[in-house]
Amino acid sequence: MRYLYNHKDLALSLRQIRHQATEIFIQYNIDFLWLCAERDSQNDVLKAHDNPPKESSSLGMLQANFKRAQESARVLEECFKYLISPNPNAPNFKTLRYALYTLEKECMALLNDLPKSGFSSV
Image (tube, rainbow, N blue to C red; front, side):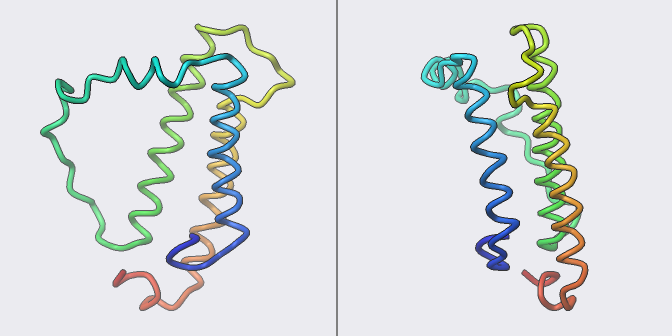
């Protein structure tokens, strides 16, 4: 939204969600260095698999990225339920997941209102 369409409000909303996700990890003292050290990308069982995009437009790419982010938030939401006692007053991944649903809707509405040449060929 920032680079392709220069849409400040939507770009700031996406940035805020990323920062809130980081804050959740910090709030629960999740060690980023440990997470990185434990990632075995050289031996990842799906390293060689690549899924070609189903749609070759920036609109399709945007929607696919939102779906990935929503799925990730859902997985983290479930993991945190088992690892940490929930604090209903603190930001959590369920809140972020629903923020992503709302933001996806806003982004898709904006892109659907643009002339087709504005995003289909990018």
